[in-house]
Amino acid sequence: MWRPSFSSEYDNTPVEKASGSIVMEPKCDSNLTSFQFRSCQLLSRQAFGFWKVEILLNALSAMKAPVDLVCVRCPADVRHRAGYSPKHNRIWMCANRFWNPFEFRRVLVHELTHAFDFARAKVDTGSCVHIACTEIRAWNLSGECDLWRNSFKYFGEEMINRKQRCVRDGAVASLLENERCQDTYVAHAALEEAWPQCWRDYWPFTTKPDLDTRWRQSPMLR
Image (cartoon, rainbow, N blue to C red):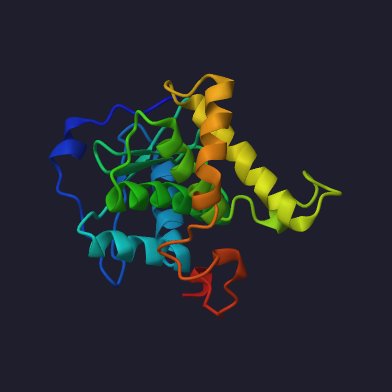
C-alpha cells in the first residue's frame, strides 16, 4: 500500500484539536495545484458538517486523541485514495483523486473509524485479527457498503446478505494490502474470527448508522 512521506513541517506542527464546533483545517501537500488545494479545502469543510464525521471527531477529542488531516498528491496508479497513520495519528486524503463530496465524506468516515479504534483500544498492527476488526467496522459504518450504492453490484441477493458481502469483500481486500496478512488463507481466517463481534460493533454511534432515521440538516445547506 502506498503511503505519503510526511514532511518535517507536518511532524513539527501541533495537531489542531477538534471541538464541538468542529473547526479544523486540513494541512496540505505543497505538490498540490492551487485548484486541488482549494477543492480539498472545500470538500473537507463540507465533510466536517456531516453528522457521522462530527460524532467521530467529537469522540476522538473526548478521548484526547484529535486526529490531523493531510491532503496529499497521490500517484495515478495507486488503488487507495486515503489512509490512516497510527504512528502520526494522521489521516491522508488524495486531493487529486476526489471530486464527489459524498464519496469524500464516506472515505473520511472510513479512516476516522480506524483512528477511533486505535484511540479506544490497544490495536496490535501485527495481528491480522485486530486489523480485520477495524476494517470490518470501517467498511460497515462509513456508508461505502450501503445498499443503494451497491444495488446493481450484488443484484439478486437478499438485502442483508448484500451489505454483508460488500463489507466482507472490502475488508478482505484491505487485509490483503497489509504486508502481514497477504496470504489469502490468513486474511479470510482473520475475517471469520473477527466478524461476529466486530460486525455488530457500532460505537461511537448509538445505533446502526444506516438505520438511524433522525433528520439532520445537510452540510451542503449550511
